[in-house]
Image (tube, rainbow over all chains, first blue to last red; front, side, top):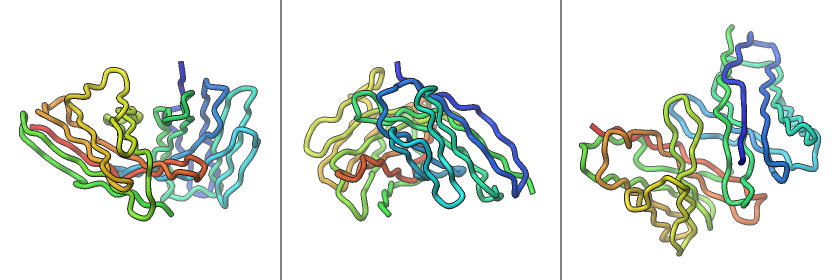
Length: 111
Length: 116
């Protein structure tokens, strides 16, 4: 079945780069997404990538997609304390009707 | 950008009562809205998909008689938790799909439900 896996925790120092990894199972996924959730809040769409792309860059965010290995990563350059949050990777389900989320990676940024 | 609101943001109710949660797309029309449930430190679990003017499609294991969904207009969907019990306490998040725009879902801020 469809499944999305992420590591649960990542801890970095302010100013360093953060790399959050994700693997997914549905090779037919057309779009893959990264969402950010701050404590007690809903999800904020950070970025997405279409499956025919290898990379997408948006300011401090870089998304890399390895479709062969079904591996997605989110790199945050110059990580700030305000980046501390839970980051969810998501793929669209086979029916194309909903998103399948990973369990989320908690990013902790220390100054 | 597309904004989705939820009301209330936090609700506490007694066991056995019903609670209605509203999800609104503020600056766009959403043909499809989704309802998710999130337990502490867990991922989002899709409960149901709601299309305007038609019955909601529920995920396996979600009781449709307990979680009533109404999508009366292109900007409003409601989730009613009927006869709430403490195990229904959770964070409920809705999302709305912007039709014709890359199928991106935009999420509401969530509603924290606590059933005593």
